[in-house]
Structures are given as structure tokens and as C-alpha cells.
Image 1 (cartoon, rainbow, N blue to C red):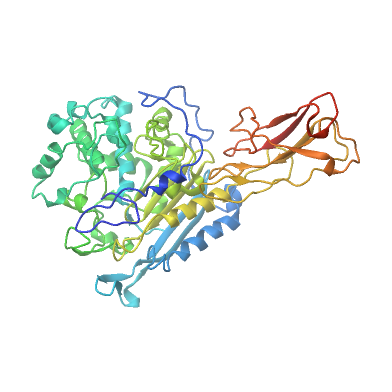
Image 2 (cartoon, rainbow, N blue to C red; image 1 turned 135 degrees about the vertical axis):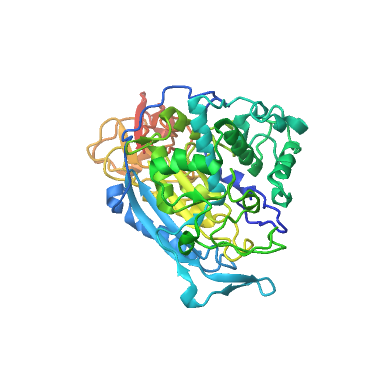
Length: 561
């Protein structure tokens, strides 16, 4: 089932992938990389702490501000109420951290609340209070499309081992795939959703696995491969078939042997056993017309119809996991592929996950399997290298290598029905809070100012008046630029044409607007931008301007971090 928008599918039809507004939220410049490199363009520097493992600890130990983490929880709890009409989720588990420290691991709400959905009254039928199950830190969730990340990691492992080639045609591994104009689709295009496949097909209606595969073999691309970004479950289902063909093993066995067992992810697997059911968050009362299958309350089995039709094991959906296991996976990738002394990927392979292969499609940045720079659910954590994914059931994972931070929000937002929730507001709000929790130290000096947060807008940072006492011939001030959501700027006050005299009032100074982008040269535009990087804007005050009669020019310097 595709996800993740305000509009939910009915009659077994998956909802549209994203809101168009998402494009308006993709702020700032894109990372310039080759459109589809066969490998990293340059050597990848090793992580500073490649063997880090996770532990619980204080926000201070993680280098995070506790007030903003408390705000993250408060905001998340608000979505347990009308959002705007119904709760966005019945409950959630929130996990946030930085470096080797999990500073927040908080369950909220209920994992199992409703026994059914009453379509006539648009209300949930609640279990008796004694049968409801509260969320716990170890609650297991149906990850939905976050499962795609595991399939992608398995594929990158095979790329690393030489059993799979990124630019190879899918049909070279699966000859039946070549029909209906798909003969030129490549492995890279499956991983970056540029194959041309439509969002999904109701494969679950086919009576057998062979009939399901025949639907894929006969499916024609909606657009020529490589010419358009179209998010599709069929890409990862096709990749599953490739992996099973080249390895000779089913996908669930590959997941166990190559990822979960080596990393010790004991709560991550396809088809969880019945003994896990009390720990699993319930999903939907699945019945037509909003669901394509009549299954009643789905609890302990995969929610996605197509994954269910494949016996619970599919490349696009079906993995169950908990917040801690996902944090370990995220820490592994931020470490460059290592957790403790276990390596699942080389650093160069991990770099492919954080490299944008979709430079031809601005707003749809994508590494191999991982989405990049998506403000619509990453919030202020989004940078050109921030990677993550969402799941239709209410799940998400975000990794920010710029700040070495990670965020997991696991909610049961289709409980009791998929039509209750809309958008990704809780995810984006959590991302905003974690981004603000990361301490941004002044690039120079001890004082910093904050201009506020805004979406799809430039924020102006107005600096206080400078103390001119004892100044030299160069004016200097220190400021910090908020990290990610918008350009943060401010006017840097400069002496008017010459050296200020001690004791002269600040009113004798004049503003000299400057701008810097990630440490680049200044330009005469009134803003300073940056993503948690130090920069030194410089502006020259031309002779004779602003009523200043000197014959020299002076340099004004400021720092933004």
C-alpha cells in the first residue's frame, strides 16, 4: 500500500503518495552530485566513532536541549485528540537521540483501543477498558512502507558483493519482466522510483502467486523509464523478486540472516509469531469499501493487502519492528555500516543511501531506497543528506548525518480506520522539535540569537546594536543561523566608511547587508544562510557612501553558525 497523504484509498485502492504542498516545503539548495553514479564520486571519510552502540542517557549527554524534547512529547500527545476531527493515532512510541545516546524513548496513548469501526456513526467501537493495551517502549508495529528500507539495504549488500549491478536491467535477472515496455528498467530505477511504474496494483485479487507475478510482467510503465519520479510499491516488489532470484533465498530469510540476526534486532521480522500479539499495536478494522479485503480487526498480521496476499512477506511492506531496533539500524547507518564490531555495509555503500540519485527531479530527492530532504515529514531535520521513510500505518524513521541525530515516530494511525488520519503533521512537528533540541553553538563568541522558525519562508534575524566601545577598524559580530527550515538572516552593522571612534554612539553605524551560503563568498543580499555550519560573511563599505566622507573602504565581518 502506498502512502502517505491526507487522502486515503477506498475499495482497496492505495492512496496517492504525497501532497503537492510538499514541493513548496523543499527549501534551500540541493546537493550537487552525479545523477546516477556507479559508486561514490570520492573517498568517503570514515565516521569519527564507527563502533558506537546505543544507550539510554540524558539529553545533556546527547548534546540535546531537554526543553525541546519535552516539547516534542507534548506536541505528540496533542495528536491523541482531534486532529482536526479524529485522533491522528491511538498511540505512539517516540524515540530521539544523538550520537550514542537515546535521550527520549516515550510511549503515549494506546496500542490496542478499538475492536471495530462503525461506518454509520464514524466512530470507533472501543474494547472494554480492561482489554485495552497501553503503548510501551517495546511495542511492535507493522512498519508498512518503512519495510522498503530493509529491502533496499539487502539490495545494496548484493551490490557491494558484486552479485547485483546498479545499472543492470531488471530483465537480465528476471527475463519475464521485460514485457510491456519494461525491458530497459534498471535496478537503480527500482530503488529511486524512476522506473515509470504506477503507484500500485491490486495484486491481492489474483488467486495465486504465479497470477500475481503475471500482473507485474504485463504491467506497462506510465512513463518511459528514467523520465519521471513515480513512487510505486511495484518497484520494491520487483526488487524482492530479483533478490530472491540471485540469492536463492526468500526475502524473510535474507532479512534474518543479513540484517536482523547480525545486529541483534530481536523484535524485527516478517510474520511475527502469535506469542508477540500482546506486544503488537493493532491497525485497522479492514472491511470494504475502505479496504479491499474483509478481515475485521487486523492485529498481529500485516495490514497491507498486497503484502498479505504474498503471505506476509513482500519487498514493499510486511516488516514488524519496535523503536529500539530501528534506532539500532539508524545508528548502524550513521556509523557507516557498523554497530559495535558488526558490519553490515561498507562506508562507501552507506554513502549511496545518503546520495541524491534524483537530481533531475527536484523535490523528489532519493538515495538508494531512502528518501532525502523531505520537509513534509522530516520537518526542520531536513537537509540535502537527511534520509528517511514513512509508512502508511503511521510509522517513520529520520536520520540526519549532519547533526548525527535520529528520530523514530511509530504510531498506529490507521487504528481503527485509515480514513481518520491525514497528512504528516505529528512527524514534522517531532522533526522540528528535535532539530531545535540540537545545540547550535555560536561560531564565535558566547552570544547567539534565534530568529524563529517558519515554513517556506525566509526568516530575518535582527541583531542587537553593537557596543562600539574600544572597537578597531573592523566591526565584527557573532550570530547563529537556524539550521534547516528556512534561510535565517540578519543585517551586520558596519562602520560608516571608516574606523569608529571609541565613545561614538551606535547610531553612527550603518547596516551593511551581506549573505553567505554554507561558507561561500558573500553577496550583497540581505540575508545569511546556513545549515549548522560556521561561515564568515564579509562586506566592504565603499568610500563616500551613506554620507561618509572618508576616502577608504573598510571590511565588516560577522559569523553565522
